[in-house]
Image (cartoon, rainbow, N blue to C red; front, side, top):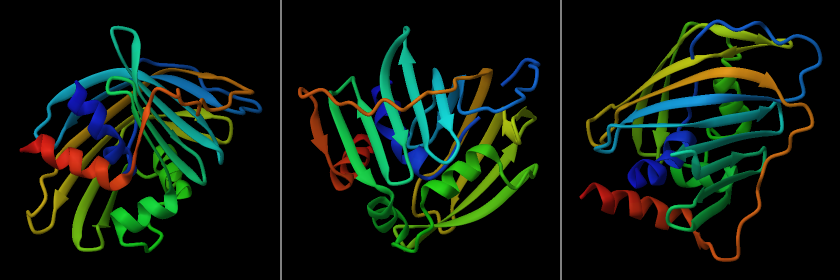
Amino acid sequence: MKNLFTSIILLVILLTMGSCASQRALTGNIDAVSARLETQVRAFNLDEKAGGNIRMKRGEAIQISLTKFGIEGVRVVLTPDSILFVNKLTKTYLRTSFAEADKMLMGGEGTLNFRNVEAYFWNDNRSGEDDAVLPLGGMFPIELHTDYGRSLRVGEHRLPLKISMEMNAADGLIETGRVQMKLSKVKAVNGWTPNTQISDKYKSLNVVKLLRGLLNQKK
């Protein structure tokens, strides 16, 4: 489980999201939504499942919490300017900007930004599937294929309730895999703001250390 919690930020940075039983549309002026989250990751030598919840406020924030036995283990908060990753199992956290993450992971071409991540989560193109190539590290192209399941009307938007994403390294140089995420029990949470508080007992990490940790765990 620790491997999943440590790896999830990289997977979220590379984009994702996501089921279930029928639910009525959410109409009216929706400020923000929350939903139960189920995710399965088959990547980086992992085959793990985790539950939790996701909260999103259009144009402002995306917060993902993963839980174990009802206790939050990992929290990821994305805003237009920042990325926050908190690992409560190891009492560590990473706080950085999209600009820095884009420079580190995508070569600094502006591919990785909040607007693109949010559009992916909400399937703003309203397509059944999507294909893209991500220039990981500015050197290794990652082919990303996404299949969207059915969606739920939320205000003026259509929120996907299931996303299945496959990542493949074009040259086979990087181990990649599959991520599936499902949403259920979607509800409006008007007035919500993301939780970005960090305990003084937590140790700060940077992107380089986090990526080195991922590589070391794979050995």
